[in-house]
Length: 364
Image (cartoon, rainbow, N blue to C red):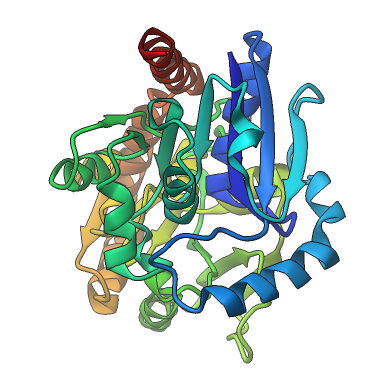
């Protein structure tokens, strides 16, 4: 198959959603498919507000950053995956493609409105994208009569209420990247937490919970990490790591942690949570949707309502006070996420694309 993957411009920093797409691109070329990734500066669709002004801003961004789109340094991308860039897609770009994969709501709307063959168009949904845009616009994209792939069960159930052309391909954890080095039983009062400015990640609630934990456990150490600058005036018990690579995540963050604290209000999946679980950290999480596929209450995780910093703190304290419970939850969690294999997900992903191409060919 000839496959085009259309994504928005990137800034060459690690991203869970982009990692999934790049992993699949690598797998598809290893299977003999021809794959190109097109980074698009401007997505034009009818529901977008201030289209003229956004055209201008995105054109300037295209002039400034187009060449940078052809470099990805934080992940090893197979050289057979062709990287391209454009200001805006045109229908003729896909005349010879068997499948076109739209990686967000705006791209899906744009390509459908440009009458790129709908029977060749696949829309990858990795989150309820209302966290990035207006809900009415996202729902309009979800209503498009095209094949959709979602990465989590809660997304499958939500999209099915709107449109039926949807299939679940769960996210995965690479066993070669995330595994237990530091014995679970030997870990101290260490909690890790990701830093993210998006309000739906709700980092603030996590920090408030950890203040309470620190009052009970003065030897608490918090490993705080992310691609962004840390908040100002962090307490001395919080250690910040910026732009961690896979080795740093595995060895200096997850494998040092007794507990991974996952505080999102709404989450597509939660790759960092499954990575931490695979590395032996017990999961304490909010009930954020994405956790549903791997967070089982009192078996693989302790779950709390969103924004409940006291409940999150109590869960952490309970695990620090009961080491056997922490070990049990961490061990169960590591075992569960081992079943979320890349091979299984990649094969299912490929099969969906093959079926879309086959139907399109028959209809052609």
